[in-house]
Amino acid sequence: MNPGDRVRVERAGVTNEGVLMPSSTPDHLVVKLDGGYNVGIAREDADVDVLESDVYDVESAQSESAASEIAFDDDLPTISLISTGGTIASTVDYRTGAVTAQFDAEDVLRAVPDLAARANYRGRVVTNILSENMTPAVWKELAEAVAEEIRAGADGVVVMHGTDTMQFSASALSYMLDTPVPIVFTGSQRSADRPSSDNVMNAVCAVEAAKADAAEVLVCMHGSTSDDACALHRGTRVRKNHTSRRDAFETVGAEPLGTVDYDTETVEFRRAFAERGAVDLDVSLELNEDVDLLKFTPGLDVDRYAAMLRDADLDGLVVEGTGLGHVHTDLIPVLEDLVDDGVVVAMTSQCLEGRVCDRVYDTGRDLLDAGVVETGDTLPGTAKVKLMWALEHCEDPADAMERSLAGELQQRSVPWT
Image (cartoon, rainbow, N blue to C red; front, side, top):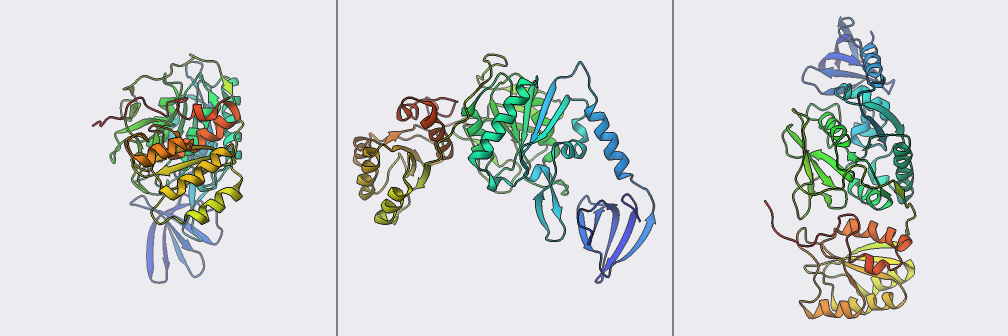
Protein backbone atom coordinates (compact mmCIF):
# COMPACT_ATOMS: atom_id res chain seq x y z
CA MET A 1 0.00 0.00 0.00
CA ASN A 2 1.55 3.26 -1.21
CA PRO A 3 0.46 6.86 -1.80
CA GLY A 4 -1.33 6.94 -5.14
CA ASP A 5 -3.12 3.61 -4.64
CA ARG A 6 -6.88 3.52 -4.78
CA VAL A 7 -8.07 2.06 -1.49
CA ARG A 8 -11.19 1.18 0.46
CA VAL A 9 -10.87 1.79 4.20
CA GLU A 10 -13.36 0.43 6.71
CA ARG A 11 -13.24 1.50 10.33
CA ALA A 12 -15.89 1.65 13.06
CA GLY A 13 -18.61 0.75 10.57
CA VAL A 14 -17.73 3.56 8.16
CA THR A 15 -16.36 2.90 4.66
CA ASN A 16 -14.33 5.45 2.68
CA GLU A 17 -12.97 4.91 -0.81
CA GLY A 18 -10.49 7.05 -2.72
CA VAL A 19 -6.81 7.70 -3.45
CA LEU A 20 -4.31 7.24 -0.63
CA MET A 21 -2.34 10.46 -0.07
CA PRO A 22 0.89 11.16 1.83
CA SER A 23 0.29 11.76 5.54
CA SER A 24 2.29 13.91 7.94
CA THR A 25 0.94 11.90 10.90
CA PRO A 26 1.97 8.20 10.95
CA ASP A 27 -1.06 7.19 13.00
CA HIS A 28 -3.52 8.41 10.36
CA LEU A 29 -4.31 7.52 6.77
CA VAL A 30 -5.25 10.34 4.40
CA VAL A 31 -7.69 9.43 1.62
CA LYS A 32 -8.78 11.81 -1.14
CA LEU A 33 -12.42 11.07 -1.80
CA ASP A 34 -13.95 11.27 -5.28
CA GLY A 35 -15.73 14.49 -4.31
CA GLY A 36 -12.38 16.22 -3.75
CA TYR A 37 -12.26 16.31 0.04
CA ASN A 38 -9.49 14.66 2.02
CA VAL A 39 -10.43 12.58 5.05
CA GLY A 40 -8.16 11.45 7.87
CA ILE A 41 -8.73 7.95 9.28
CA ALA A 42 -6.99 6.49 12.34
CA ARG A 43 -4.86 3.49 11.31
CA GLU A 44 -5.72 1.56 14.48
CA ASP A 45 -8.37 -1.09 13.78
CA ALA A 46 -8.71 0.11 10.16
CA ASP A 47 -9.28 -2.53 7.48
CA VAL A 48 -7.62 -1.41 4.23
CA ASP A 49 -8.09 -3.01 0.79
CA VAL A 50 -6.00 -1.86 -2.18
CA LEU A 51 -8.39 -1.67 -5.12
CA GLU A 52 -5.89 -0.46 -7.72
CA SER A 53 -2.18 0.30 -7.50
CA ASP A 54 -0.43 3.46 -8.70
CA VAL A 55 -3.54 5.15 -10.08
CA TYR A 56 -1.85 8.43 -9.21
CA ASP A 57 1.92 8.75 -8.77
CA VAL A 58 1.99 11.48 -6.14
CA GLU A 59 5.76 11.78 -5.78
CA SER A 60 6.36 11.81 -9.53
CA ALA A 61 3.65 14.41 -10.08
CA GLN A 62 5.10 16.63 -7.40
CA SER A 63 8.66 16.35 -8.69
CA GLU A 64 7.59 16.98 -12.29
CA SER A 65 5.62 20.03 -11.18
CA ALA A 66 8.55 21.34 -9.15
CA ALA A 67 10.96 20.85 -12.02
CA SER A 68 8.76 22.71 -14.48
CA GLU A 69 8.27 25.61 -12.10
CA ILE A 70 11.93 26.21 -11.32
CA ALA A 71 13.09 26.04 -14.93
CA PHE A 72 14.45 29.43 -16.02
CA ASP A 73 13.04 31.19 -19.07
CA ASP A 74 14.69 34.43 -20.21
CA ASP A 75 11.38 35.64 -21.63
CA LEU A 76 9.55 35.45 -18.29
CA PRO A 77 9.64 37.92 -15.39
CA THR A 78 11.04 36.84 -12.03
CA ILE A 79 8.53 36.69 -9.19
CA SER A 80 9.58 36.08 -5.59
CA LEU A 81 7.22 33.98 -3.49
CA ILE A 82 7.59 34.74 0.21
CA SER A 83 5.77 32.53 2.68
CA THR A 84 4.71 33.53 6.19
CA GLY A 85 2.22 30.69 6.73
CA GLY A 86 -1.55 30.85 6.85
CA THR A 87 -4.26 28.79 5.17
CA ILE A 88 -2.82 29.19 1.65
CA ALA A 89 0.28 27.36 2.90
CA SER A 90 -1.42 24.88 5.19
CA THR A 91 -2.60 21.35 5.57
CA VAL A 92 -4.98 19.49 7.83
CA ASP A 93 -3.64 17.84 10.97
CA TYR A 94 -5.75 14.69 10.93
CA ARG A 95 -4.97 14.02 14.57
CA THR A 96 -6.91 17.12 15.64
CA GLY A 97 -8.84 17.99 12.50
CA ALA A 98 -7.42 21.52 12.60
CA VAL A 99 -5.77 23.47 9.80
CA THR A 100 -2.09 24.10 10.53
CA ALA A 101 0.57 26.10 8.68
CA GLN A 102 3.15 23.60 7.40
CA PHE A 103 4.20 24.35 3.84
CA ASP A 104 7.01 26.54 2.59
CA ALA A 105 7.06 28.46 -0.67
CA GLU A 106 8.29 25.49 -2.73
CA ASP A 107 5.47 23.34 -1.37
CA VAL A 108 2.98 25.96 -2.54
CA LEU A 109 4.50 25.85 -6.02
CA ARG A 110 4.07 22.08 -6.08
CA ALA A 111 0.51 22.41 -4.78
CA VAL A 112 -0.43 24.98 -7.44
CA PRO A 113 0.88 23.68 -10.77
CA ASP A 114 -1.12 26.43 -12.52
CA LEU A 115 1.68 28.79 -11.49
CA ALA A 116 4.09 27.05 -13.88
CA ALA A 117 5.12 28.91 -17.04
CA ARG A 118 3.82 32.24 -15.74
CA ALA A 119 7.13 33.43 -14.33
CA ASN A 120 10.54 32.42 -13.07
CA TYR A 121 10.17 31.89 -9.34
CA ARG A 122 12.32 32.52 -6.33
CA GLY A 123 11.05 31.21 -3.00
CA ARG A 124 11.85 31.89 0.62
CA VAL A 125 10.21 31.41 4.01
CA VAL A 126 10.23 34.30 6.48
CA THR A 127 8.20 32.47 9.10
CA ASN A 128 5.62 29.70 9.26
CA ILE A 129 2.84 30.90 11.54
CA LEU A 130 -0.88 31.48 11.54
CA SER A 131 -1.55 35.16 11.13
CA GLU A 132 -2.98 35.69 14.61
CA ASN A 133 0.59 35.18 15.81
CA MET A 134 1.96 37.98 13.62
CA THR A 135 4.07 40.65 15.39
CA PRO A 136 5.83 43.91 14.46
CA ALA A 137 9.12 42.02 14.68
CA VAL A 138 7.94 39.71 11.90
CA TRP A 139 6.79 42.73 9.87
CA LYS A 140 10.39 43.96 9.98
CA GLU A 141 11.75 40.56 8.91
CA LEU A 142 9.20 40.43 6.11
CA ALA A 143 10.00 43.94 4.87
CA GLU A 144 13.72 43.13 4.91
CA ALA A 145 13.09 39.93 2.95
CA VAL A 146 10.99 41.74 0.35
CA ALA A 147 13.66 44.43 -0.02
CA GLU A 148 16.36 41.78 -0.49
CA GLU A 149 14.31 40.09 -3.21
CA ILE A 150 13.81 43.39 -5.03
CA ARG A 151 17.53 44.16 -4.81
CA ALA A 152 18.23 40.68 -6.21
CA GLY A 153 16.22 41.54 -9.32
CA ALA A 154 12.67 40.39 -8.60
CA ASP A 155 10.15 41.97 -10.96
CA GLY A 156 7.42 41.51 -8.36
CA VAL A 157 6.86 39.92 -4.97
CA VAL A 158 3.98 37.75 -3.78
CA VAL A 159 3.57 37.40 -0.02
CA MET A 160 1.55 34.39 1.15
CA HIS A 161 -0.08 35.35 4.44
CA GLY A 162 -2.93 34.30 6.71
CA THR A 163 -6.05 36.33 6.05
CA ASP A 164 -7.00 37.32 9.60
CA THR A 165 -4.26 39.95 10.01
CA MET A 166 -3.23 40.41 6.39
CA GLN A 167 -4.52 44.00 6.35
CA PHE A 168 -2.18 44.95 9.20
CA SER A 169 0.89 43.44 7.53
CA ALA A 170 0.00 45.03 4.19
CA SER A 171 -0.33 48.40 5.93
CA ALA A 172 3.00 47.96 7.68
CA LEU A 173 4.87 47.24 4.44
CA SER A 174 3.10 50.15 2.75
CA TYR A 175 4.88 52.51 5.15
CA MET A 176 8.15 50.62 5.57
CA LEU A 177 8.91 50.27 1.85
CA ASP A 178 8.96 52.63 -1.11
CA THR A 179 8.85 50.04 -3.85
CA PRO A 180 9.61 50.15 -7.58
CA VAL A 181 7.75 46.85 -8.17
CA PRO A 182 4.39 45.37 -7.07
CA ILE A 183 4.22 43.70 -3.65
CA VAL A 184 1.10 41.54 -3.59
CA PHE A 185 -0.32 39.89 -0.49
CA THR A 186 -2.56 36.89 -0.98
CA GLY A 187 -4.02 34.11 1.11
CA SER A 188 -6.79 31.57 1.25
CA GLN A 189 -10.05 31.51 3.15
CA ARG A 190 -10.37 27.76 2.69
CA SER A 191 -7.67 25.10 2.90
CA ALA A 192 -6.39 23.29 -0.16
CA ASP A 193 -8.06 19.97 0.72
CA ARG A 194 -11.53 21.51 0.20
CA PRO A 195 -13.10 21.55 -3.29
CA SER A 196 -14.18 25.16 -2.65
CA SER A 197 -10.64 26.27 -1.79
CA ASP A 198 -9.66 29.65 -3.17
CA ASN A 199 -5.91 29.06 -2.93
CA VAL A 200 -5.24 28.30 -6.61
CA MET A 201 -7.13 31.26 -8.07
CA ASN A 202 -5.79 33.70 -5.49
CA ALA A 203 -2.20 32.56 -6.04
CA VAL A 204 -2.48 32.72 -9.83
CA CYS A 205 -4.09 36.17 -9.79
CA ALA A 206 -1.52 37.44 -7.29
CA VAL A 207 1.32 36.39 -9.62
CA GLU A 208 -0.38 38.14 -12.53
CA ALA A 209 -0.76 41.29 -10.39
CA ALA A 210 2.92 41.07 -9.39
CA LYS A 211 3.80 41.11 -13.11
CA ALA A 212 1.64 44.19 -13.76
CA ASP A 213 2.36 47.92 -13.49
CA ALA A 214 1.06 49.00 -10.05
CA ALA A 215 4.16 49.36 -7.87
CA GLU A 216 2.24 49.39 -4.60
CA VAL A 217 1.52 47.07 -1.71
CA LEU A 218 -1.68 45.29 -2.72
CA VAL A 219 -3.98 42.61 -1.37
CA CYS A 220 -5.26 40.15 -3.98
CA MET A 221 -8.26 38.02 -3.01
CA HIS A 222 -11.52 36.77 -4.54
CA GLY A 223 -13.64 39.65 -5.82
CA SER A 224 -16.90 37.68 -5.56
CA THR A 225 -18.12 34.26 -4.48
CA SER A 226 -17.55 33.02 -8.04
CA ASP A 227 -14.24 31.87 -9.51
CA ASP A 228 -14.11 34.63 -12.10
CA ALA A 229 -11.86 37.43 -10.87
CA CYS A 230 -9.78 38.64 -7.96
CA ALA A 231 -9.94 42.17 -6.61
CA LEU A 232 -6.80 44.21 -6.01
CA HIS A 233 -7.01 46.33 -2.87
CA ARG A 234 -4.58 49.03 -1.74
CA GLY A 235 -2.82 47.74 1.35
CA THR A 236 -3.82 50.70 3.51
CA ARG A 237 -7.49 50.80 2.50
CA VAL A 238 -8.45 47.12 2.76
CA ARG A 239 -10.35 45.32 5.49
CA LYS A 240 -11.43 41.73 6.02
CA ASN A 241 -15.20 42.08 6.40
CA HIS A 242 -16.33 38.46 6.59
CA THR A 243 -15.06 35.52 8.59
CA SER A 244 -15.31 32.82 5.93
CA ARG A 245 -16.58 34.02 2.54
CA ARG A 246 -14.06 33.80 -0.25
CA ASP A 247 -14.72 37.46 -1.11
CA ALA A 248 -14.13 38.54 2.49
CA PHE A 249 -11.86 41.49 1.66
CA GLU A 250 -13.15 44.91 0.64
CA THR A 251 -11.70 48.30 -0.13
CA VAL A 252 -13.46 50.58 2.36
CA GLY A 253 -14.91 53.80 0.99
CA ALA A 254 -14.00 53.18 -2.65
CA GLU A 255 -13.97 50.56 -5.37
CA PRO A 256 -10.96 48.23 -5.51
CA LEU A 257 -7.86 49.59 -7.19
CA GLY A 258 -8.15 46.93 -9.87
CA THR A 259 -9.11 43.38 -10.84
CA VAL A 260 -7.46 40.29 -12.26
CA ASP A 261 -9.61 38.19 -14.60
CA TYR A 262 -8.83 34.56 -13.82
CA ASP A 263 -9.74 33.17 -17.24
CA THR A 264 -8.13 35.80 -19.48
CA GLU A 265 -5.30 36.66 -17.04
CA THR A 266 -6.05 40.33 -17.71
CA VAL A 267 -5.11 42.88 -15.05
CA GLU A 268 -7.22 46.04 -15.16
CA PHE A 269 -6.84 49.11 -12.96
CA ARG A 270 -9.75 51.43 -12.26
CA ARG A 271 -7.99 54.21 -10.36
CA ALA A 272 -4.64 55.97 -10.34
CA PHE A 273 -1.72 54.00 -8.92
CA ALA A 274 2.03 54.29 -8.40
CA GLU A 275 3.79 53.29 -11.62
CA ARG A 276 6.36 50.50 -11.81
CA GLY A 277 9.87 51.94 -11.59
CA ALA A 278 8.69 55.42 -10.59
CA VAL A 279 10.69 55.36 -7.34
CA ASP A 280 13.86 53.71 -6.12
CA LEU A 281 13.65 51.16 -3.36
CA ASP A 282 13.73 52.82 0.05
CA VAL A 283 13.50 50.98 3.36
CA SER A 284 12.52 52.47 6.73
CA LEU A 285 11.88 49.61 9.11
CA GLU A 286 11.76 51.05 12.61
CA LEU A 287 8.42 50.95 14.42
CA ASN A 288 7.46 52.33 17.82
CA GLU A 289 5.61 49.50 19.53
CA ASP A 290 4.41 51.69 22.43
CA VAL A 291 1.18 52.39 20.53
CA ASP A 292 -2.24 51.03 21.40
CA LEU A 293 -5.70 50.96 19.86
CA LEU A 294 -8.66 51.71 22.16
CA LYS A 295 -12.20 50.98 21.00
CA PHE A 296 -14.68 53.14 22.87
CA THR A 297 -18.00 51.51 23.82
CA PRO A 298 -20.86 52.72 26.03
CA GLY A 299 -20.30 51.68 29.63
CA LEU A 300 -16.51 51.82 29.38
CA ASP A 301 -15.10 52.32 32.90
CA VAL A 302 -13.28 55.64 32.52
CA ASP A 303 -11.33 55.40 35.76
CA ARG A 304 -10.12 51.86 35.04
CA TYR A 305 -9.10 52.69 31.50
CA ALA A 306 -7.41 55.89 32.63
CA ALA A 307 -5.24 53.87 35.01
CA MET A 308 -4.51 51.30 32.31
CA LEU A 309 -3.49 53.94 29.80
CA ARG A 310 -1.20 55.71 32.24
CA ASP A 311 0.40 52.43 33.35
CA ALA A 312 0.98 51.43 29.72
CA ASP A 313 3.47 54.30 29.29
CA LEU A 314 2.38 54.89 25.70
CA ASP A 315 3.91 57.07 23.00
CA GLY A 316 0.83 56.87 20.82
CA LEU A 317 -2.86 55.99 21.12
CA VAL A 318 -5.42 55.46 18.38
CA VAL A 319 -9.02 55.80 19.56
CA GLU A 320 -11.80 54.08 17.65
CA GLY A 321 -14.65 56.42 18.49
CA THR A 322 -18.33 56.41 17.63
CA GLY A 323 -19.82 58.21 14.64
CA LEU A 324 -17.83 61.27 13.65
CA GLY A 325 -15.19 60.43 16.26
CA HIS A 326 -16.68 60.68 19.74
CA VAL A 327 -16.09 59.23 23.20
CA HIS A 328 -17.81 59.73 26.57
CA THR A 329 -17.16 63.25 27.79
CA ASP A 330 -15.60 61.90 31.01
CA LEU A 331 -12.84 60.31 28.91
CA ILE A 332 -11.80 63.60 27.29
CA PRO A 333 -9.76 64.87 30.30
CA VAL A 334 -7.91 61.54 30.35
CA LEU A 335 -6.98 61.92 26.69
CA GLU A 336 -5.96 65.54 27.30
CA ASP A 337 -3.63 64.44 30.11
CA LEU A 338 -2.03 61.91 27.75
CA VAL A 339 -1.48 64.62 25.12
CA ASP A 340 0.03 66.91 27.77
CA ASP A 341 2.43 64.06 28.63
CA GLY A 342 3.59 63.89 25.02
CA VAL A 343 1.41 61.02 23.78
CA VAL A 344 0.08 61.39 20.21
CA VAL A 345 -3.66 60.63 20.41
CA ALA A 346 -5.40 60.05 17.05
CA MET A 347 -9.14 59.68 16.51
CA THR A 348 -10.69 57.21 14.06
CA SER A 349 -14.27 56.03 13.64
CA GLN A 350 -15.71 52.57 14.17
CA CYS A 351 -18.13 53.26 11.30
CA LEU A 352 -17.21 51.35 8.14
CA GLU A 353 -17.84 54.33 5.84
CA GLY A 354 -17.33 58.07 6.21
CA ARG A 355 -14.73 60.09 8.06
CA VAL A 356 -13.91 61.67 11.38
CA CYS A 357 -15.05 65.27 11.79
CA ASP A 358 -14.82 66.64 15.31
CA ARG A 359 -16.08 70.10 14.42
CA VAL A 360 -19.78 69.25 14.29
CA TYR A 361 -20.68 68.53 17.93
CA ASP A 362 -19.45 69.91 21.24
CA THR A 363 -17.80 66.61 22.15
CA GLY A 364 -15.72 66.73 19.00
CA ARG A 365 -14.69 70.33 19.57
CA ASP A 366 -13.66 69.44 23.13
CA LEU A 367 -11.54 66.58 21.77
CA LEU A 368 -9.80 68.94 19.36
CA ASP A 369 -9.19 71.42 22.19
CA ALA A 370 -7.67 68.51 24.16
CA GLY A 371 -5.14 67.97 21.37
CA VAL A 372 -6.65 64.84 19.82
CA VAL A 373 -5.76 64.51 16.12
CA GLU A 374 -8.33 63.81 13.39
CA THR A 375 -7.42 61.07 10.90
CA GLY A 376 -10.12 61.54 8.26
CA ASP A 377 -11.28 58.18 6.90
CA THR A 378 -8.13 56.26 7.85
CA LEU A 379 -9.09 52.77 9.01
CA PRO A 380 -8.43 52.14 12.73
CA GLY A 381 -6.03 49.23 12.17
CA THR A 382 -4.16 51.15 9.51
CA ALA A 383 -4.00 54.19 11.80
CA LYS A 384 -2.32 52.14 14.51
CA VAL A 385 0.34 50.82 12.14
CA LYS A 386 0.82 54.29 10.64
CA LEU A 387 1.32 55.88 14.06
CA MET A 388 3.85 53.18 14.99
CA TRP A 389 5.80 54.13 11.87
CA ALA A 390 5.28 57.90 12.05
CA LEU A 391 6.63 58.13 15.60
CA GLU A 392 9.96 56.80 14.32
CA HIS A 393 10.20 58.52 10.96
CA CYS A 394 8.23 61.79 10.98
CA GLU A 395 9.40 65.02 12.60
CA ASP A 396 5.79 65.81 13.54
CA PRO A 397 3.88 62.50 13.94
CA ALA A 398 0.63 64.26 14.87
CA ASP A 399 0.72 66.26 11.66
CA ALA A 400 1.54 63.10 9.68
CA MET A 401 -1.62 61.42 11.00
CA GLU A 402 -3.67 64.15 9.29
CA ARG A 403 -2.00 63.61 5.91
CA SER A 404 -2.03 60.70 3.49
CA LEU A 405 1.35 58.99 3.33
CA ALA A 406 0.49 55.72 1.54
CA GLY A 407 -3.02 56.19 0.17
CA GLU A 408 -4.64 55.55 3.56
CA LEU A 409 -6.51 58.87 3.80
CA GLN A 410 -8.85 59.84 0.99
CA GLN A 411 -9.68 63.45 0.21
CA ARG A 412 -13.41 62.77 0.10
CA SER A 413 -15.74 60.10 1.48
CA VAL A 414 -18.55 59.53 -1.01
CA PRO A 415 -20.93 56.62 -1.61
CA TRP A 416 -20.02 54.36 -4.50
CA THR A 417 -21.55 51.34 -6.22
